[in-house]
Length: 128
Image (cartoon, rainbow, N blue to C red; front, side):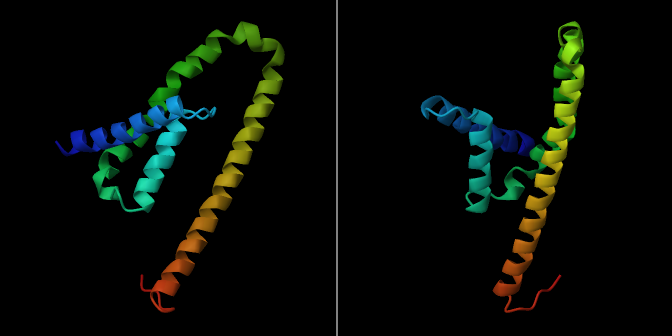
């Protein structure tokens, strides 16, 4: 029953994101709105991580399965893209590299910001 409730919460937030995407006249996918809503709910303590953590971990575990069908579609369209395959591989490599670098910098910033915030809240003493 715990997993059903957690999945319902995640689905509700996702549905809200899709609703926002349909009502707000911006070219932003509903999944992005949903992730932003979930992030805000977690930051503002509207939702606790424990309320969705187990199901979210499971969804992350099975996420690679969702990339199988697009991968097969790319293989099926090889005859149409074979003339520009070098460009596609180069673009994929460069965007993956940029994504890793940006993600690394954002993560480092958040970790450093969290440590500074922890020191300020505990009067300069941090207990780990």
